[in-house]
Image (cartoon, rainbow, N blue to C red; front, side, top):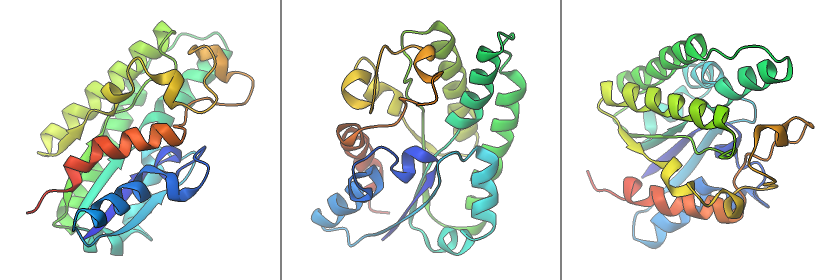
Length: 214
């Protein structure tokens, strides 16, 4: 089985102490231990938006898309965060509707491309909230996840509720967690990525989605 993980800095493994401890690699080892002969590949980079991921799978990643048996898609956090943080710094009104509309279009294009070029099972991940004590983040992540679920459902794709796995546990699962407020990210360091324990939680939650026989 070929497992392909698509995403941004979280999927890339930023803030894990080694790439081997990022959730895609943890799941590959778990699948092999359960008798699923699995190879894993990652198409993800820090800072990638949904538009970046779409360009990557239509270009260099197209061969892996065709060969994959199961694909996870975790994207969208950067789309919302970049816009929201810039508006917050500039004390401008935050209107996520156009950002989420673009994200929905890109996610739909990603899922459509996979459907047209692969027989892989697809799992789309929701986004956890690294700033649970900021109302603006709570509302923004909720809106992002509503759009994610709606687009996934329109393509008949399963949704992994990662936000539920992190809810109330962000302090234990996020690297560099401070106060759980947006202001924590205004000094240039973003306390948003899973630590090793967070990656373990993600991997454990995703495993039932991955370890299914056709």
